[in-house]
Amino acid sequence: MKLRRFAYLLGAAMICLTIVVCTSTFMGCEVVSGLQGLTVSPSYTILTTVSNTVELSVSGGPSNSLALPIEWSMTRPDLGYISQNSGYTAIYYRLAPDGDNVIIATDQYGNEGYARVRQLQGNQAMNLSASEADSKTWTISIVSPLGGPYEWWVHDPTVGTISSSGSGESAVYTIKDEAGSNDIYVRDARGNIGAISIP
Image 1 (cartoon, rainbow, N blue to C red):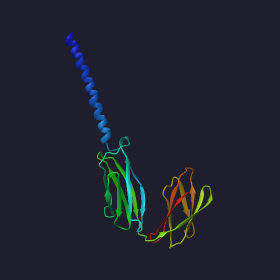
Image 2 (tube, one colour):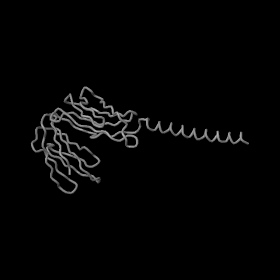
Image 3 (tube, rainbow, N blue to C red):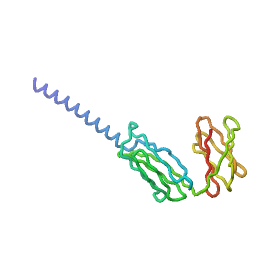
Image 4 (cartoon, helix red, strand yellow):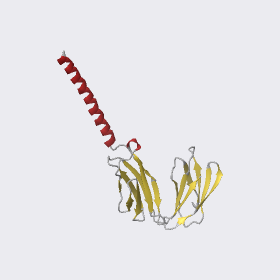
């Protein structure tokens, strides 16, 4: 009888040990899988020759808790570099006038977040004005045009769209159903940039 009871207790202990080991293993795999995305802000930045740096910050990860240290890298080191890095934040400094760079933040478990930096050569900032036609439509105009053709675009096309005609010195911004502010950009033939926030 004692031998049978001992065998029963030994079997129960083995089952408990197996559950603990399996749970720890699966929890470990979940943390180090590298599939949990980090968030880098701002996710998209335009740099001209009048704005050579951008400060980036990272957040998120498993259980919304960053696993320090954070490693900062980029796909095009010929276009710029990280000049300061405090772990949660970094300052990107551009080296070249033109090109697109992707900044990558990686934690110690391989989780990653991305930000895109677009670098343009223009050396003058264009001023824009906005007038509200109705609750969903704005007219955006270049105050002092520097020479077209002009390229217009919006930061978040899910919030609104932009269209231009004629000389391209003005454009119509139309807000979609989703509420929220949006940034409107225009670039001239020499790469000069203008920007304005709506609404």
